[in-house]
Image (cartoon, rainbow, N blue to C red; front, side):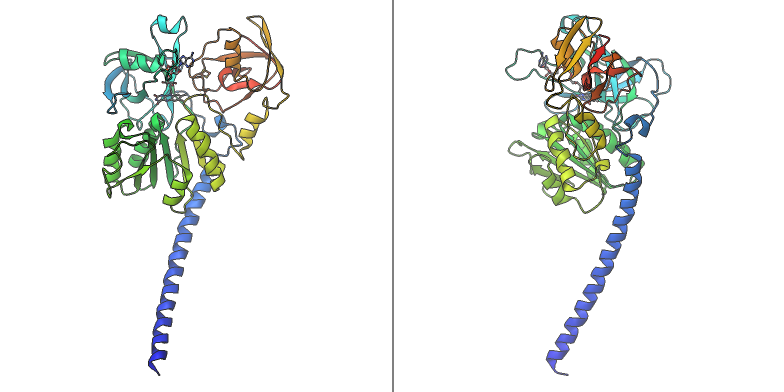
Length: 429
Ligand SMILES: Cc1cc2nc3c(=O)[nH]c(=O)nc-3n(C[C@H](O)[C@H](O)[C@H](O)COP(=O)(O)OP(=O)(O)OC[C@H]3O[C@@H](n4cnc5c(N)ncnc54)[C@H](O)[C@@H]3O)c2cc1C
Ligand code: FES
């Protein structure tokens, strides 16, 4: 045998070994991918978007109406003092019911009448920690007045920051909401923009405690480091838990914001959270995506995830205010948007108690905006279908929801803040 043949034999043997090695690796990867897919498919079935949300996970309210809570601790969470956490314990000393990570509490606040008129102030705040037997926690960001506007700063958030201290009492409705993490062990991607981090913190803390082997990614978008909330807590978790991947995305970083941990457990990115970043970083796995953040972030990320091929049942999101997020494939989204949004869909709306009648056309907003525009006083709180304050009886006709409400309205009534008229409608307002 010549030396050339010998070299060819050796090279052939090496190539054969490499091929066997790669095939085994590929086979194992494929098997684990299939296993994860099955887990995720089981969850997809449970989260079938064609099923009305209330039929998915009937979570009975833990108490009815408002319950009195006392503020046990108040903690500033960021360096610019814009976000403050409140630790709440029940005044009656009775056991504290658990909740699903991602759910929120609804508050009725005694803000000064000079700010609120005669209306009670009702707002929703997400629970920002995993369930504990002793207390609930919320984290609230001050809402400033829009730059250059004549409007006052946000009533509820500033009232909580400035007037609610340790020992203050707050009136609270039971945890509620359909936006919460699943209990499977499918890998999960949490995306929080700004104060939209709060439900993600609850999901993350619960997951790492109850499902320590589950793969969790958190993409947290802020403008710069000074806006980060609970940064030390997140960095400690990333250092301790190898299956938790923390990515901080800063769209407008200060000079030294990005290079604090060049090779540590925390990864920094200059820019917003977007699908190209996710595509670059995430391995090929059937992740479930949970998103909460400003409306523009949801309006760009949700369709981009769909375009990337993420099935509808694996995209879960919540907006902290009125938001219309276009969904490409969901039958439920089609139900919500197809009605009332046609060009010629001008319909007559009658407000029976106030004796007013007017034509509603697409572009005129929700029935709550429409009523207020006519000078009709309707009680409202979250303006996002969460608190139930704007619940109004329907005497005749039908309405359509622009987003699935978290509060289940009584039969024969609707939530004006997230509905538009589907046919001519008469409302008890
Ligand atoms: C399910 C859910 C969960 C939420 N979770 C959280 C959370 O965890 N943390 C959190 O901080 N927030 C959360 N929010 C948002 C929160 O409920 C409040 O909407 C937020 O705190 C602002 O309320 P506010 O009373 O301070 O401001 P508002 O008084 O409602 O004012 C809102 C903004 O409008 C401006 N404004 C006032 N008057 C006018 C006017 N006439 N025209 C135009 N603009 C005007 C104000 O200056 C302010 O910027 C959540 C909301 C929902 C629906
Ligand atoms: S204002 Fe909260 S549900 Fe309409």
